[in-house]
Length: 137
Image (cartoon, rainbow, N blue to C red):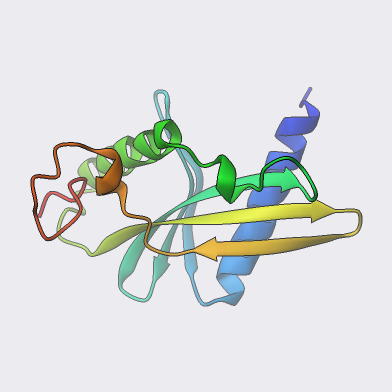
């Protein structure tokens, strides 16, 4: 049996996938898992592979979905993206990380989409490279 939080999260991911599809994204995977790692949505935006973290909250809560995206969660997304790239041999494809915040209201919802979250800011090993540290190329 799913908890209210799990039901709300699943609803938010469904809404986010529909939103991204309307924006021209091609959804490749939803809820991709490997061991303890998970990616909510993996999609193509043109020729760019996009790892999308979806955060769903009730409207009017203490923090929005996007405000709840902390460094620990971003590290988890970065680590999952690295494994995904390795497993599918996609090191040479352009990629980025986006976040979609869903605010649920009775009978409606609001979407916030942030493109190209810099995952290198959460990693002290970025060493001044021009590209994000989680991208190996």
